[in-house]
Length: 463
Image (cartoon, rainbow, N blue to C red; front, side):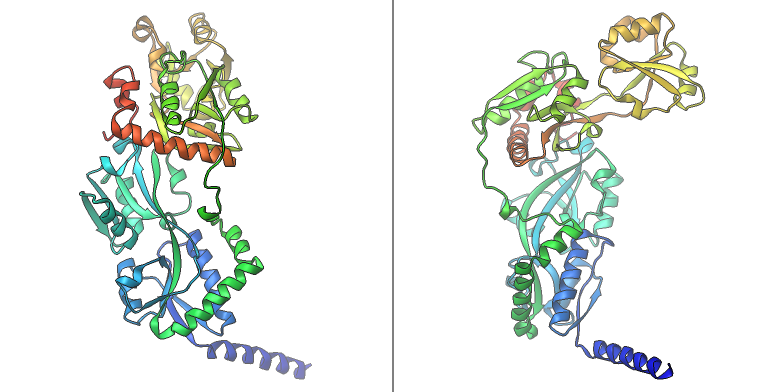
């Protein structure tokens, strides 16, 4: 028994000694814990270098400093950087295999800068040493105040505190779930570039070996499995360059001035955007509950005017919004009683128009009725059959505004288009967003709204 124990012990010591004898390479490390891109790259590098007989140590460094450290040989290389940095850092050698698509992303606050188009901004924050951003802005000839900070979290904290309207980062620098943290964040992809692994020129021969290892891992399907594991999207180079589409079908509810006629604001927006691609839009109206159901069944290409929480499984929400909806109100006779009911202290009966899922904003103490017309809710409120009605201020008559009490149960929320999450749907989304953004910047979309005030409250331009 003791002989077996010593045999196992000697084997373990041998393995540990062998591992410690492998040459050690030092690369820059993650500055954002848990970044999917960082985890993907590090697992890929660990596997590839281990097969070539190397160990890796990752050292978190500020972005700008990491370039200098690698170029001067104090780091053995950089995990992943955009192509072309060799022109500024001549002692770095690119490993000839694109790791993933690197995106330059503008993240803005819709409430401050609308669609947050670069042409409409006069200041933003980015990272010190962010080569891709510097090259992009230089190529566009942009003249704005750009503040550079040392790390991405500092930039995002400034955005969250509303000290700046927007930040420019890479997609991989965004913490997981950040964009889902607020419907007011807007994401605009400014550029898509391939990212490569770099080594110091003293490791030029190793760069060829690692490149060959990457290609072998690609051929075996190992890298594809790693992408799936870490949620790294497929390269845009694998997406269809174009998709043949016929007429575009859209459905919405009957909203006065916006969808109730062919000249409604939202239909003008859709038709104008798709006309630039030579596409026609056919529109249908239904009650909102049925409209959402018919879209979810795949009967339409686009659902028009949805809240973020209304996007169904299989739906793809637009990054741009088309309008901002006013706060949802609780409407009733007794303000103090309404406050207790909304806080969950008293039971209540409420009512809203069919399809508006306002129950998600409220507690289970409120029994909710759905009706086809707001007038039906107001009649029940008048007859004492309800405690509250949930709707918007603009749907109340002047007399109702004077005689009834109102409480806000949500803040202003952006309204979106929802596309089918298919090849066709993603293609339509790209076409719409590009054209819509251009038409907002040109001022064309402002003319679709009934007046300057309604356009301002849509929050499409810089506030």
